[in-house]
Amino acid sequence: MKKIFLGLLTLGIAMHSYGQDTVFKVKIKKETVPTTIIESIDNDYGNLEIIEFYALPIEYIEEDVYINDDIESEEDYETFQVKFKGEQGSLVVTYNKEGEELSTVEHLKNVAPNIQVREAVAKSFPGWILTKDYYKMTHFANKKAKERYKLILKKGDNEKVVFMDEKGEILKVHKKINTNL
Image (cartoon, rainbow, N blue to C red; front, side, top):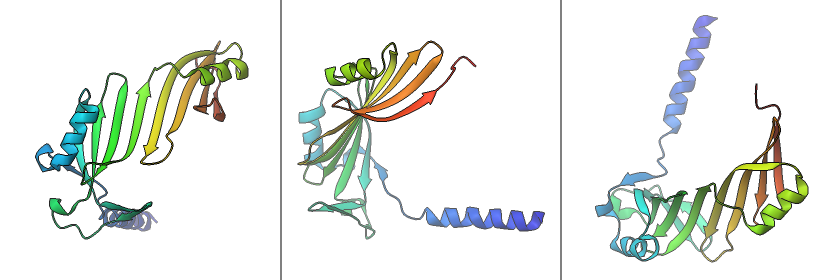
């Protein structure tokens, strides 16, 4: 029985390793990033610290995304991602080869939620205190940005994790009871 279990475990690990054949992003050096992207970064995000550059084996055609598995060299990449660090969080921007922004994802910590969110929290959770908040904004080119808040609320020893959109609509609530265990 032990041999069968070890054999299945080994087979599972081998299959998992084989499945990791496709790489979805490759870390690259600044020198290999197209100059059009560097110029866009300087114009739009010059005040943020650049953490990493990535080349992505994907292509955007109209509104569809395709994985390009025919990449043989760094010159074959058409999509790039840049990760930035700011004072309150991080920002990931995806560009095409021409330096046009395709998408942005922003993660911030401990920023004051907008007035709609604050009013919704006060109305829906009277007596609860906001102890932490996280903000995520996702934006795709030519589309409306999607904003989400993750709020940690506390009342006595009880704690809740509340997810809301930018309008103050409650998306999900997780209850954590008695945090002093």
